[in-house]
Length: 239
Ligand code: FPP
Image 1 (cartoon, rainbow, N blue to C red):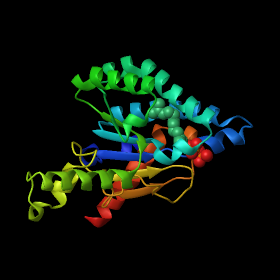
Image 2 (image 1 turned 90 degrees about the vertical axis):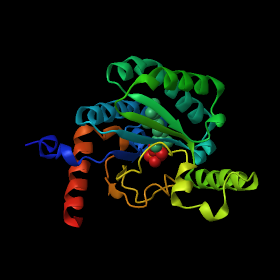
Image 3 (image 1 turned 90 degrees about the horizontal axis):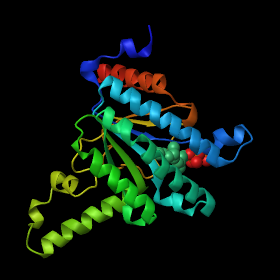
């Protein structure tokens, strides 16, 4: 019996967040340039999105580019941005066919204009879809997101729109980029690193953490199903 058949579809995590890591090492292991790893990483992205749709997962959030990633060599950054544009271009029909709504979180104003325009267009086109919400974390930093939320709340207090004593966790969450989605119940990180790397720090407070040694370009839907199964076993122990 495959992993999929063992999954209890009535107890799926609503929101899965993934730290896609190991593209560079995967490419290096094959004697290729890092960008070759990113290109193959896109194949994994497609498979994981399809696997999520197949199961009926509601939210999938992928750590696609962190604010720290801007410090990588210029050529690599440009190549990732181009890959993003070409992937969105290529996948938009599949998103429409599969009822996938594209979303993005992060400091999107930092993105190259072409990338921003293409992303905004795809977000608008897919906004009619009601199935999987696929969120790309781009130019994302969780600490920045939290500081940003604090600033927004402070501004509301200064303007008299909010009383200080009314600030609570719900108010805070409403000022995060993720205000319109539930918190992830499962966080997956590939490539054998046991770090969170400034990803959804507030949101993963109660998430199950799943680390796998597989490098991202080797990660496929069977691996996702295995992680979900592990999550369900852990949740059953806690229940
Ligand atoms: C991490 O591997 C990967 C990235 C920083 C980029 C992720 C980008 C993609 C998978 C392609 C574009 C995605 C979409 C959604 C179109 P790494 O480079 O940090 O690998 P390393 O840790 O082995 O160096």
